[in-house]
Length: 292
Image (cartoon, rainbow, N blue to C red; front, side, top):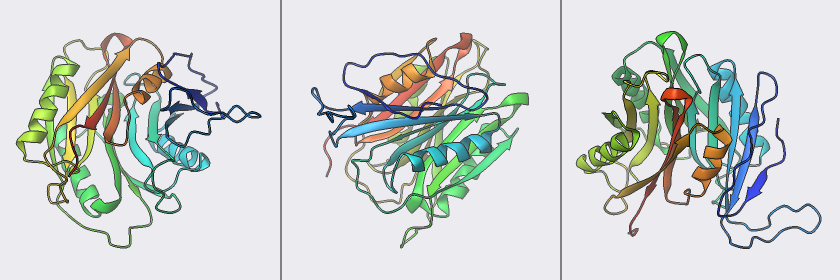
């Protein structure tokens, strides 16, 4: 377990992952300042503009989700400060891994409680997406992320994470999804953005974008992205999205730290998937352009 956050400033650097026993939790911090102020006693950053990540691992998916929720609460995160939560795994039979990205500089909307709805089955992907849309649509106001991962035995998992208790004015709306598949991850990322734009979605109407794959060791298995949209939510101008990709065969921690360099207040999500050859594919999707 790694209880003390590691503070970085650009450019990022890499440090080895720390794994103890069957459950692992890691924490990372990026301070968006060329010369962050530091406490003279503790060395901790006193710059209020920072983004952080926390990771939780377990032998079962729900236990990993519960562990992640406990960890973000221990970190002092408040309602409204989580950017995204992502589910991924190093292999079909690997540990369940969850990562949350957050900023305690964002406006707090009260104490943090998180609930989730999960599917762990052998559905085809469209059925997972449909069921996630139904779960998220019951209260779109509080949705944090919708995320999927490959699982053992040919199964997969999908999680819908939401703030709890419900907002004072919860809204039930229809959530839709689009999917892209390609032989390359960047090709699929470009395609998912094109498909999102083709729906007429506006800035602020993309709930989540997720990366996943049907087989980690198979070179012929497509890279897959799914995006969840709330097209009846308030729009904040024309939509344009960019992505930053990280990945390779180093540690998960190094990719989380690289992704932090791309995360900002307009980020939609950070998402990752296992890849062929024991590698990792990670993506940060962010709104670009002027707000209205």
